[in-house]
Length: 493
Image (tube, rainbow, N blue to C red; front, side, top):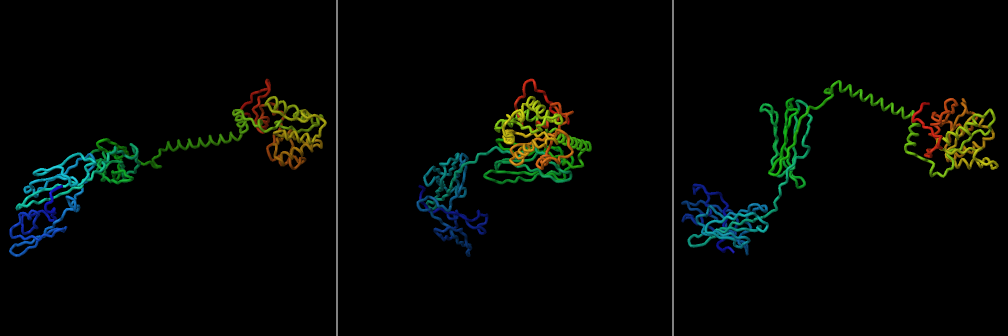
Protein backbone atom coordinates (compact mmCIF):
# COMPACT_ATOMS: atom_id res chain seq x y z
CA UNK A 1 0.00 0.00 0.00
CA UNK A 2 1.28 3.51 -0.72
CA UNK A 3 2.27 5.63 2.31
CA UNK A 4 -0.67 7.41 3.90
CA UNK A 5 0.66 10.97 3.88
CA UNK A 6 -1.34 14.16 3.42
CA UNK A 7 -4.33 14.12 1.07
CA UNK A 8 -3.87 14.26 -2.71
CA UNK A 9 -3.95 17.81 -4.05
CA UNK A 10 -5.53 18.78 -7.40
CA UNK A 11 -5.06 22.14 -9.04
CA UNK A 12 -7.79 23.68 -11.25
CA UNK A 13 -6.29 27.02 -12.43
CA UNK A 14 -4.40 27.91 -15.61
CA UNK A 15 -0.59 27.66 -16.00
CA UNK A 16 1.42 30.49 -14.30
CA UNK A 17 2.23 33.68 -16.16
CA UNK A 18 5.33 35.85 -15.72
CA UNK A 19 3.60 38.40 -13.45
CA UNK A 20 2.65 37.16 -10.02
CA UNK A 21 0.25 40.07 -9.46
CA UNK A 22 -1.81 39.27 -12.55
CA UNK A 23 -2.18 35.49 -12.22
CA UNK A 24 -3.33 32.98 -9.57
CA UNK A 25 -0.71 31.02 -7.70
CA UNK A 26 0.10 27.46 -8.62
CA UNK A 27 0.16 24.40 -6.45
CA UNK A 28 3.85 24.77 -5.66
CA UNK A 29 2.97 28.02 -3.91
CA UNK A 30 2.07 25.74 -1.02
CA UNK A 31 5.75 25.18 -0.65
CA UNK A 32 7.38 28.33 -2.10
CA UNK A 33 4.82 30.98 -1.24
CA UNK A 34 5.97 34.38 0.13
CA UNK A 35 6.15 34.72 3.81
CA UNK A 36 3.40 37.33 3.94
CA UNK A 37 0.86 34.99 2.14
CA UNK A 38 -1.78 33.50 4.39
CA UNK A 39 -3.67 30.19 3.61
CA UNK A 40 -7.21 29.07 4.45
CA UNK A 41 -7.52 25.29 4.10
CA UNK A 42 -10.95 23.77 3.29
CA UNK A 43 -10.80 20.01 3.87
CA UNK A 44 -13.02 17.47 2.10
CA UNK A 45 -13.96 19.99 -0.60
CA UNK A 46 -13.76 19.62 -4.36
CA UNK A 47 -13.71 23.10 -5.87
CA UNK A 48 -11.25 25.35 -7.66
CA UNK A 49 -9.12 27.60 -5.55
CA UNK A 50 -8.71 31.37 -6.11
CA UNK A 51 -7.04 34.36 -4.52
CA UNK A 52 -8.04 37.75 -3.12
CA UNK A 53 -5.90 40.88 -3.33
CA UNK A 54 -5.39 42.58 0.01
CA UNK A 55 -3.73 45.85 0.80
CA UNK A 56 0.05 45.90 0.95
CA UNK A 57 0.03 43.07 -1.63
CA UNK A 58 -1.12 40.61 1.00
CA UNK A 59 -3.04 37.80 -0.69
CA UNK A 60 -5.48 35.24 0.66
CA UNK A 61 -5.78 31.90 -1.09
CA UNK A 62 -8.27 28.99 -0.95
CA UNK A 63 -6.83 25.50 -1.54
CA UNK A 64 -8.90 22.42 -2.49
CA UNK A 65 -8.01 19.30 -0.51
CA UNK A 66 -9.46 15.88 -1.33
CA UNK A 67 -9.19 12.68 0.66
CA UNK A 68 -8.63 9.20 -0.60
CA UNK A 69 -11.56 6.78 -0.63
CA UNK A 70 -11.81 4.58 2.41
CA UNK A 71 -9.65 1.46 2.11
CA UNK A 72 -8.17 2.72 -1.15
CA UNK A 73 -5.01 4.48 -2.28
CA UNK A 74 -6.74 6.99 -4.63
CA UNK A 75 -9.84 9.12 -5.05
CA UNK A 76 -12.30 7.84 -7.65
CA UNK A 77 -13.18 11.41 -8.66
CA UNK A 78 -9.64 11.98 -9.83
CA UNK A 79 -9.19 8.92 -12.05
CA UNK A 80 -8.33 9.26 -15.77
CA UNK A 81 -9.79 6.51 -17.97
CA UNK A 82 -7.43 5.21 -20.60
CA UNK A 83 -8.76 2.55 -23.05
CA UNK A 84 -6.26 0.44 -24.97
CA UNK A 85 -6.76 -2.41 -27.45
CA UNK A 86 -5.39 -5.81 -26.61
CA UNK A 87 -1.88 -6.48 -28.03
CA UNK A 88 -1.46 -2.74 -28.59
CA UNK A 89 1.10 -0.61 -26.68
CA UNK A 90 0.12 0.07 -23.07
CA UNK A 91 1.99 3.14 -21.69
CA UNK A 92 1.78 4.52 -18.15
CA UNK A 93 4.06 7.55 -17.64
CA UNK A 94 4.73 8.31 -13.98
CA UNK A 95 6.26 11.76 -14.46
CA UNK A 96 5.45 15.22 -13.08
CA UNK A 97 7.34 17.98 -14.80
CA UNK A 98 5.98 20.64 -12.45
CA UNK A 99 7.34 19.09 -9.22
CA UNK A 100 10.18 17.05 -10.71
CA UNK A 101 12.93 18.88 -8.80
CA UNK A 102 11.19 18.34 -5.47
CA UNK A 103 10.23 14.65 -5.97
CA UNK A 104 12.39 12.31 -3.92
CA UNK A 105 10.65 9.03 -4.79
CA UNK A 106 8.14 7.74 -7.38
CA UNK A 107 6.08 4.59 -6.87
CA UNK A 108 3.73 2.72 -9.22
CA UNK A 109 0.77 0.74 -7.86
CA UNK A 110 -1.78 -1.53 -9.53
CA UNK A 111 -5.00 -1.82 -7.61
CA UNK A 112 -3.08 -0.39 -4.62
CA UNK A 113 -0.36 -3.06 -4.81
CA UNK A 114 3.15 -1.80 -5.48
CA UNK A 115 4.71 -2.72 -8.81
CA UNK A 116 7.83 -0.57 -8.97
CA UNK A 117 9.69 2.25 -7.26
CA UNK A 118 12.38 4.72 -8.32
CA UNK A 119 14.13 7.83 -6.99
CA UNK A 120 13.01 10.01 -9.90
CA UNK A 121 10.37 8.93 -12.45
CA UNK A 122 8.91 5.71 -13.87
CA UNK A 123 7.61 4.78 -17.33
CA UNK A 124 5.76 1.52 -17.92
CA UNK A 125 5.42 0.23 -21.51
CA UNK A 126 4.26 -3.21 -22.71
CA UNK A 127 1.81 -4.94 -25.08
CA UNK A 128 -1.59 -4.88 -23.46
CA UNK A 129 -3.23 -8.05 -22.21
CA UNK A 130 -6.67 -8.50 -20.71
CA UNK A 131 -5.04 -9.21 -17.34
CA UNK A 132 -3.46 -5.71 -17.40
CA UNK A 133 -6.84 -4.07 -16.85
CA UNK A 134 -7.15 -2.17 -13.54
CA UNK A 135 -6.30 1.04 -11.65
CA UNK A 136 -2.69 2.22 -11.88
CA UNK A 137 -1.59 4.90 -9.39
CA UNK A 138 1.59 7.00 -9.70
CA UNK A 139 2.55 8.29 -6.23
CA UNK A 140 5.13 11.14 -6.11
CA UNK A 141 6.76 11.68 -2.66
CA UNK A 142 8.29 15.07 -1.86
CA UNK A 143 9.56 16.80 1.34
CA UNK A 144 9.15 20.36 2.61
CA UNK A 145 10.16 21.79 5.94
CA UNK A 146 10.77 18.31 7.26
CA UNK A 147 7.34 17.02 6.28
CA UNK A 148 6.45 14.38 3.69
CA UNK A 149 3.78 15.05 1.00
CA UNK A 150 2.33 12.66 -1.59
CA UNK A 151 0.88 13.61 -4.99
CA UNK A 152 -1.17 10.83 -6.62
CA UNK A 153 -2.18 10.41 -10.29
CA UNK A 154 -4.39 7.40 -11.12
CA UNK A 155 -5.27 5.81 -14.52
CA UNK A 156 -8.13 3.39 -15.13
CA UNK A 157 -6.73 1.08 -17.80
CA UNK A 158 -9.52 -0.52 -19.86
CA UNK A 159 -8.35 -3.28 -22.21
CA UNK A 160 -10.68 -3.76 -25.19
CA UNK A 161 -10.84 -6.39 -27.91
CA UNK A 162 -9.11 -5.13 -31.02
CA UNK A 163 -10.90 -4.99 -34.35
CA UNK A 164 -9.13 -6.90 -37.08
CA UNK A 165 -8.90 -4.97 -40.31
CA UNK A 166 -10.81 -6.48 -43.19
CA UNK A 167 -9.82 -6.38 -46.81
CA UNK A 168 -11.53 -3.34 -48.40
CA UNK A 169 -13.78 -3.91 -51.40
CA UNK A 170 -15.62 -1.64 -53.82
CA UNK A 171 -19.34 -2.31 -54.18
CA UNK A 172 -20.52 -2.76 -57.76
CA UNK A 173 -19.08 -4.04 -61.05
CA UNK A 174 -15.44 -3.56 -61.95
CA UNK A 175 -16.33 -1.72 -65.16
CA UNK A 176 -19.23 0.76 -65.12
CA UNK A 177 -20.57 2.34 -68.31
CA UNK A 178 -22.45 5.58 -67.62
CA UNK A 179 -24.58 7.18 -70.35
CA UNK A 180 -24.47 11.00 -70.30
CA UNK A 181 -25.68 13.92 -72.36
CA UNK A 182 -23.21 16.51 -73.59
CA UNK A 183 -23.42 19.79 -71.68
CA UNK A 184 -25.05 18.16 -68.61
CA UNK A 185 -23.45 17.52 -65.21
CA UNK A 186 -22.81 13.98 -64.01
CA UNK A 187 -21.80 12.48 -60.67
CA UNK A 188 -19.80 9.26 -60.41
CA UNK A 189 -20.39 7.67 -57.01
CA UNK A 190 -17.77 5.24 -55.71
CA UNK A 191 -19.04 3.11 -52.81
CA UNK A 192 -16.77 0.94 -50.68
CA UNK A 193 -16.90 -1.41 -47.72
CA UNK A 194 -13.74 -0.50 -45.82
CA UNK A 195 -12.05 0.10 -42.48
CA UNK A 196 -12.06 3.46 -40.77
CA UNK A 197 -8.46 4.30 -41.68
CA UNK A 198 -8.49 2.93 -45.23
CA UNK A 199 -7.97 5.31 -48.15
CA UNK A 200 -10.40 5.83 -51.04
CA UNK A 201 -9.58 8.11 -53.96
CA UNK A 202 -10.23 8.87 -57.65
CA UNK A 203 -7.56 8.83 -60.33
CA UNK A 204 -7.62 9.85 -64.00
CA UNK A 205 -4.83 10.84 -66.38
CA UNK A 206 -5.39 13.92 -68.50
CA UNK A 207 -3.64 17.07 -69.52
CA UNK A 208 -3.79 19.80 -66.90
CA UNK A 209 -6.06 22.01 -68.98
CA UNK A 210 -8.53 19.21 -69.69
CA UNK A 211 -9.95 18.44 -66.26
CA UNK A 212 -10.84 21.90 -65.05
CA UNK A 213 -14.49 20.80 -65.04
CA UNK A 214 -13.78 17.77 -62.77
CA UNK A 215 -14.08 18.06 -58.99
CA UNK A 216 -13.53 15.39 -56.36
CA UNK A 217 -15.71 15.71 -53.26
CA UNK A 218 -14.75 14.69 -49.73
CA UNK A 219 -15.18 11.22 -48.30
CA UNK A 220 -18.45 10.41 -46.57
CA UNK A 221 -18.52 7.55 -44.05
CA UNK A 222 -21.25 5.76 -42.14
CA UNK A 223 -21.82 2.53 -40.25
CA UNK A 224 -24.63 0.12 -41.08
CA UNK A 225 -25.24 -3.22 -39.35
CA UNK A 226 -21.82 -3.02 -37.73
CA UNK A 227 -20.00 -2.49 -41.04
CA UNK A 228 -18.14 0.64 -42.09
CA UNK A 229 -18.98 2.16 -45.48
CA UNK A 230 -17.55 5.11 -47.37
CA UNK A 231 -18.37 6.91 -50.58
CA UNK A 232 -16.51 9.41 -52.70
CA UNK A 233 -18.12 11.37 -55.54
CA UNK A 234 -16.41 12.61 -58.68
CA UNK A 235 -18.38 15.47 -60.21
CA UNK A 236 -17.95 16.30 -63.90
CA UNK A 237 -19.55 19.58 -64.90
CA UNK A 238 -20.88 20.21 -68.40
CA UNK A 239 -19.64 17.00 -69.98
CA UNK A 240 -17.59 17.60 -73.13
CA UNK A 241 -16.72 15.38 -76.04
CA UNK A 242 -13.20 14.70 -74.75
CA UNK A 243 -14.67 13.46 -71.43
CA UNK A 244 -16.27 10.49 -73.19
CA UNK A 245 -14.73 7.03 -73.61
CA UNK A 246 -12.23 7.87 -70.92
CA UNK A 247 -11.33 5.82 -67.83
CA UNK A 248 -12.06 7.31 -64.40
CA UNK A 249 -10.71 4.95 -61.73
CA UNK A 250 -11.85 4.69 -58.11
CA UNK A 251 -9.48 2.89 -55.71
CA UNK A 252 -9.72 1.79 -52.09
CA UNK A 253 -6.52 0.63 -50.41
CA UNK A 254 -5.00 -0.44 -47.12
CA UNK A 255 -1.96 -2.50 -46.13
CA UNK A 256 -3.65 -5.79 -47.05
CA UNK A 257 -5.45 -5.14 -50.34
CA UNK A 258 -6.15 -2.70 -53.16
CA UNK A 259 -9.42 -2.73 -55.13
CA UNK A 260 -10.18 -0.60 -58.20
CA UNK A 261 -13.29 0.05 -60.29
CA UNK A 262 -13.42 1.78 -63.66
CA UNK A 263 -16.05 4.28 -64.84
CA UNK A 264 -16.41 5.11 -68.56
CA UNK A 265 -18.71 7.82 -69.92
CA UNK A 266 -20.72 7.03 -73.05
CA UNK A 267 -22.86 9.38 -75.06
CA UNK A 268 -26.54 8.69 -74.43
CA UNK A 269 -28.25 7.28 -77.50
CA UNK A 270 -31.35 9.02 -78.88
CA UNK A 271 -33.74 8.42 -81.79
CA UNK A 272 -31.85 10.85 -83.95
CA UNK A 273 -28.67 8.83 -83.46
CA UNK A 274 -30.07 5.70 -85.15
CA UNK A 275 -28.62 5.45 -88.69
CA UNK A 276 -31.14 5.29 -91.50
CA UNK A 277 -29.86 1.99 -92.86
CA UNK A 278 -30.09 0.38 -89.41
CA UNK A 279 -33.67 1.59 -88.98
CA UNK A 280 -34.65 0.38 -92.45
CA UNK A 281 -33.01 -2.99 -91.93
CA UNK A 282 -34.82 -3.41 -88.62
CA UNK A 283 -38.17 -2.65 -90.21
CA UNK A 284 -37.53 -5.17 -92.99
CA UNK A 285 -36.61 -7.86 -90.48
CA UNK A 286 -39.74 -7.13 -88.43
CA UNK A 287 -41.96 -7.38 -91.52
CA UNK A 288 -40.34 -10.64 -92.60
CA UNK A 289 -40.83 -12.15 -89.17
CA UNK A 290 -44.49 -11.10 -89.21
CA UNK A 291 -45.00 -12.67 -92.65
CA UNK A 292 -43.36 -15.93 -91.55
CA UNK A 293 -45.55 -16.09 -88.44
CA UNK A 294 -48.73 -15.50 -90.49
CA UNK A 295 -47.67 -18.17 -93.00
CA UNK A 296 -47.02 -20.67 -90.23
CA UNK A 297 -50.44 -20.01 -88.73
CA UNK A 298 -52.14 -20.47 -92.11
CA UNK A 299 -50.18 -23.66 -92.79
CA UNK A 300 -51.15 -24.96 -89.38
CA UNK A 301 -54.83 -24.38 -90.12
CA UNK A 302 -54.69 -25.93 -93.60
CA UNK A 303 -52.67 -28.98 -92.59
CA UNK A 304 -53.96 -29.39 -89.03
CA UNK A 305 -55.24 -32.91 -89.88
CA UNK A 306 -51.86 -33.95 -91.35
CA UNK A 307 -50.03 -32.55 -88.32
CA UNK A 308 -52.36 -34.35 -85.93
CA UNK A 309 -51.88 -37.68 -87.74
CA UNK A 310 -48.13 -37.17 -87.82
CA UNK A 311 -48.12 -36.49 -84.07
CA UNK A 312 -50.15 -39.64 -83.43
CA UNK A 313 -47.72 -41.72 -85.42
CA UNK A 314 -44.69 -40.11 -83.83
CA UNK A 315 -45.97 -40.54 -80.26
CA UNK A 316 -47.64 -43.93 -81.02
CA UNK A 317 -50.85 -42.85 -79.29
CA UNK A 318 -53.53 -45.49 -78.77
CA UNK A 319 -56.97 -44.56 -77.40
CA UNK A 320 -58.37 -48.10 -77.64
CA UNK A 321 -56.44 -49.92 -74.93
CA UNK A 322 -58.41 -49.37 -71.73
CA UNK A 323 -61.95 -48.34 -72.73
CA UNK A 324 -63.40 -51.89 -72.83
CA UNK A 325 -64.87 -51.49 -76.32
CA UNK A 326 -64.87 -54.31 -78.91
CA UNK A 327 -65.16 -52.37 -82.17
CA UNK A 328 -63.53 -49.19 -83.35
CA UNK A 329 -66.63 -48.18 -85.34
CA UNK A 330 -70.15 -49.39 -86.10
CA UNK A 331 -71.07 -48.85 -89.76
CA UNK A 332 -74.70 -47.86 -90.41
CA UNK A 333 -75.69 -48.11 -94.07
CA UNK A 334 -78.54 -49.02 -96.40
CA UNK A 335 -78.97 -52.79 -96.19
CA UNK A 336 -80.74 -53.10 -99.54
CA UNK A 337 -78.19 -54.13 -102.16
CA UNK A 338 -80.41 -53.65 -105.24
CA UNK A 339 -78.93 -52.27 -108.40
CA UNK A 340 -80.09 -48.76 -107.61
CA UNK A 341 -78.10 -48.68 -104.33
CA UNK A 342 -75.30 -51.05 -105.31
CA UNK A 343 -72.47 -48.48 -105.09
CA UNK A 344 -73.53 -47.29 -101.65
CA UNK A 345 -73.79 -50.89 -100.41
CA UNK A 346 -70.39 -51.81 -101.88
CA UNK A 347 -68.77 -48.77 -100.24
CA UNK A 348 -70.12 -49.75 -96.80
CA UNK A 349 -69.40 -53.48 -96.80
CA UNK A 350 -66.27 -53.63 -98.98
CA UNK A 351 -64.44 -50.30 -99.40
CA UNK A 352 -64.56 -49.15 -95.78
CA UNK A 353 -63.39 -52.52 -94.34
CA UNK A 354 -60.66 -52.92 -96.96
CA UNK A 355 -59.07 -49.54 -96.18
CA UNK A 356 -59.78 -49.09 -92.47
CA UNK A 357 -59.25 -52.69 -91.38
CA UNK A 358 -56.57 -54.05 -93.69
CA UNK A 359 -54.67 -50.84 -94.34
CA UNK A 360 -54.94 -48.96 -91.02
CA UNK A 361 -55.64 -51.77 -88.56
CA UNK A 362 -59.10 -50.76 -87.34
CA UNK A 363 -61.89 -53.22 -86.45
CA UNK A 364 -65.33 -52.36 -87.86
CA UNK A 365 -68.73 -53.78 -86.96
CA UNK A 366 -70.81 -54.45 -90.09
CA UNK A 367 -74.28 -55.79 -89.27
CA UNK A 368 -74.66 -58.27 -92.12
CA UNK A 369 -71.14 -59.63 -91.57
CA UNK A 370 -70.76 -59.68 -87.78
CA UNK A 371 -74.32 -60.38 -86.50
CA UNK A 372 -75.91 -63.86 -86.49
CA UNK A 373 -79.43 -63.73 -88.00
CA UNK A 374 -82.46 -64.57 -85.88
CA UNK A 375 -82.19 -62.08 -82.99
CA UNK A 376 -84.08 -58.90 -82.28
CA UNK A 377 -82.64 -56.39 -84.72
CA UNK A 378 -83.12 -53.27 -82.62
CA UNK A 379 -81.69 -54.89 -79.50
CA UNK A 380 -78.74 -56.28 -81.42
CA UNK A 381 -77.97 -52.87 -82.97
CA UNK A 382 -78.21 -51.15 -79.61
CA UNK A 383 -75.81 -53.69 -78.06
CA UNK A 384 -73.29 -53.37 -80.90
CA UNK A 385 -73.34 -49.58 -80.79
CA UNK A 386 -72.52 -49.73 -77.06
CA UNK A 387 -69.48 -51.88 -77.88
CA UNK A 388 -68.20 -49.42 -80.53
CA UNK A 389 -66.05 -46.28 -80.20
CA UNK A 390 -67.43 -44.48 -83.26
CA UNK A 391 -70.64 -44.56 -85.32
CA UNK A 392 -70.13 -44.20 -89.09
CA UNK A 393 -73.33 -43.30 -90.96
CA UNK A 394 -73.18 -43.61 -94.74
CA UNK A 395 -75.74 -40.94 -95.51
CA UNK A 396 -77.95 -40.86 -98.62
CA UNK A 397 -81.57 -40.23 -99.54
CA UNK A 398 -82.26 -43.94 -99.79
CA UNK A 399 -80.82 -44.45 -96.31
CA UNK A 400 -84.01 -43.07 -94.75
CA UNK A 401 -86.09 -46.09 -95.82
CA UNK A 402 -88.40 -47.68 -93.30
CA UNK A 403 -86.02 -50.58 -92.69
CA UNK A 404 -83.25 -48.48 -91.09
CA UNK A 405 -85.33 -45.79 -89.40
CA UNK A 406 -85.40 -47.65 -86.07
CA UNK A 407 -81.65 -48.31 -86.32
CA UNK A 408 -81.01 -44.61 -86.90
CA UNK A 409 -83.17 -43.57 -83.96
CA UNK A 410 -81.25 -45.94 -81.66
CA UNK A 411 -77.92 -44.61 -82.94
CA UNK A 412 -78.91 -40.98 -82.47
CA UNK A 413 -80.18 -41.72 -78.97
CA UNK A 414 -76.72 -43.06 -78.06
CA UNK A 415 -74.94 -40.08 -79.63
CA UNK A 416 -77.13 -37.15 -78.66
CA UNK A 417 -78.82 -38.16 -75.41
CA UNK A 418 -76.46 -40.51 -73.65
CA UNK A 419 -73.29 -39.01 -75.23
CA UNK A 420 -71.62 -42.42 -75.27
CA UNK A 421 -70.38 -42.39 -78.87
CA UNK A 422 -69.17 -39.95 -81.52
CA UNK A 423 -70.83 -39.92 -84.94
CA UNK A 424 -69.00 -39.64 -88.30
CA UNK A 425 -71.27 -38.61 -91.19
CA UNK A 426 -70.22 -39.66 -94.72
CA UNK A 427 -72.20 -38.04 -97.52
CA UNK A 428 -72.01 -40.76 -100.16
CA UNK A 429 -74.05 -38.95 -102.85
CA UNK A 430 -74.18 -35.14 -103.09
CA UNK A 431 -77.45 -33.60 -101.95
CA UNK A 432 -78.54 -29.99 -102.04
CA UNK A 433 -80.77 -30.32 -98.99
CA UNK A 434 -81.51 -32.80 -96.21
CA UNK A 435 -85.09 -31.93 -95.45
CA UNK A 436 -85.89 -35.65 -95.46
CA UNK A 437 -83.64 -36.23 -92.41
CA UNK A 438 -84.89 -36.20 -88.82
CA UNK A 439 -84.26 -33.03 -86.80
CA UNK A 440 -81.56 -34.80 -84.76
CA UNK A 441 -79.53 -35.55 -87.92
CA UNK A 442 -79.93 -31.95 -89.05
CA UNK A 443 -78.25 -30.93 -85.81
CA UNK A 444 -75.35 -33.24 -86.62
CA UNK A 445 -75.07 -31.60 -90.05
CA UNK A 446 -73.86 -28.45 -88.33
CA UNK A 447 -70.60 -30.36 -87.73
CA UNK A 448 -68.13 -31.48 -90.37
CA UNK A 449 -69.43 -34.00 -92.94
CA UNK A 450 -67.06 -36.06 -95.06
CA UNK A 451 -67.91 -36.16 -98.76
CA UNK A 452 -67.13 -39.26 -100.79
CA UNK A 453 -65.97 -38.40 -104.29
CA UNK A 454 -65.67 -41.53 -106.33
CA UNK A 455 -63.16 -40.04 -108.74
CA UNK A 456 -60.82 -38.53 -106.12
CA UNK A 457 -61.28 -40.62 -102.98
CA UNK A 458 -60.23 -44.03 -104.24
CA UNK A 459 -56.57 -43.72 -103.19
CA UNK A 460 -55.82 -44.35 -99.51
CA UNK A 461 -53.61 -41.22 -99.63
CA UNK A 462 -56.54 -38.98 -100.52
CA UNK A 463 -57.83 -36.23 -98.27
CA UNK A 464 -61.06 -38.18 -97.62
CA UNK A 465 -59.25 -41.04 -95.90
CA UNK A 466 -57.01 -38.67 -93.91
CA UNK A 467 -60.03 -36.77 -92.63
CA UNK A 468 -61.70 -40.07 -91.74
CA UNK A 469 -58.57 -41.23 -89.85
CA UNK A 470 -58.52 -37.91 -87.99
CA UNK A 471 -62.09 -38.53 -86.75
CA UNK A 472 -61.38 -42.15 -85.87
CA UNK A 473 -59.80 -43.01 -82.48
CA UNK A 474 -55.99 -43.03 -82.38
CA UNK A 475 -54.71 -46.58 -82.78
CA UNK A 476 -51.19 -47.97 -82.73
CA UNK A 477 -52.03 -51.45 -84.10
CA UNK A 478 -49.99 -52.32 -87.18
CA UNK A 479 -51.94 -53.14 -90.36
CA UNK A 480 -51.83 -56.58 -91.99
CA UNK A 481 -48.61 -57.54 -93.79
CA UNK A 482 -48.57 -56.79 -97.47
CA UNK A 483 -51.37 -54.22 -97.10
CA UNK A 484 -49.33 -51.32 -95.71
CA UNK A 485 -48.87 -48.39 -97.98
CA UNK A 486 -46.76 -45.39 -96.97
CA UNK A 487 -48.83 -42.23 -96.61
CA UNK A 488 -47.30 -38.84 -97.37
CA UNK A 489 -47.25 -36.43 -94.45
CA UNK A 490 -49.02 -33.72 -96.43
CA UNK A 491 -51.53 -34.05 -99.26
CA UNK A 492 -53.71 -31.51 -101.05
CA UNK A 493 -57.48 -31.47 -101.11
